[in-house]
Image 1 (cartoon, rainbow, N blue to C red):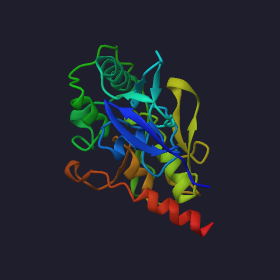
Image 2 (cartoon, rainbow, N blue to C red):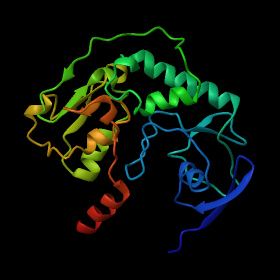
Image 3 (cartoon, one colour):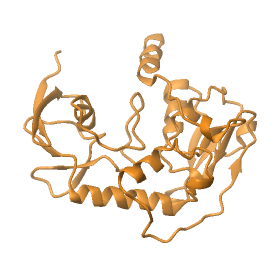
Image 4 (cartoon, rainbow, N blue to C red):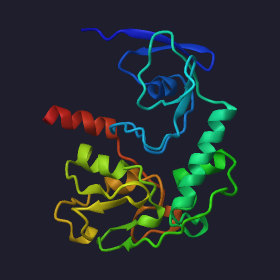
Length: 237
């Protein structure tokens, strides 16, 4: 059955997309920039970071572009004073929840959270920092997990489960106490399921996951071609 093609308006421009596509997909296909942290092409969309919130005509609520399907006649606003205010607040809350000291972070200059803060003109946070005492797991022979830098986007959980098929990572506890754990909360180096592929490290948007033995200048992330890997895995199944 042929998928219907729908027409909508994004920031005043009339565009079209498949009925199975989200606002984020159609927006990016047409050159509109919408910030994201949890979303990554090739992984299941979970809509957790809420940075991609957009305004829809006829609705007073904000809607996450990464999980909202387009509709015929929809009118979308991706950038406004209201959206900028909400996005800045989200970034500030992420910085306040954990210990994000960019100057001493191993991915300083290669961090998506840091880049978004710079794009939004953030030079301080309005919320009090919680400064939780969180551990650093360096038990793996090649990689490190620093919970102080984790923003709980779950990219690592999804890429390990959906692409690598190992399902080493999961989420422990709820809310602000949530933590990413390996093999039901065992040291990463003791994991019996981790394949050492490094996909989790390279999709991590911050310095929460990084490689040992590299300088700060070498800490840029190289996300694998996830859509291609996903399609290949589907063919194998």
